[in-house]
Image: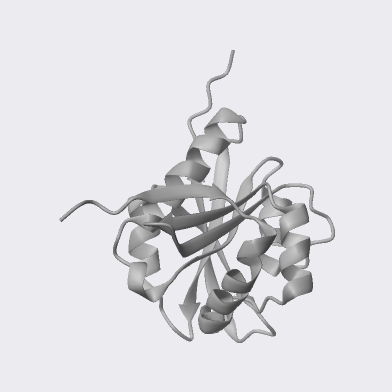
Length: 173
């Protein structure tokens, strides 16, 4: 059996309906997103990536740099208060049929390479720990070099998150 062809590319407007569907299907572990929000994210994002497997939409990742003052995310604001330069993974969603195919690793590697190439010293993310302890995500982030740098309650105290950061080796001239 042939290896699937995986392509990582920048989002297009044509991807938005699939992104909104996938976000809604996983909204219990994400923030809601509508068309207006997706358009704003497209404008603000440092990286808005899509993964395709054999030409089919399979996943997306949205990441922001520091300085997006209009972004309302409590987690983004926490990282902005802690780091002067960072790349924040707002969300990554992999469609159910494509989970366990290595897409998360591929998207994160692409993002880490971008951070390294643009001399951003840290990549950040958060993982839900209460009311649902997302052990699979915690293991994944640990394997990708992330470490907990804080915790906080968000969404009116209903959800506790582990705030995570991975240092990026940046060559200094």
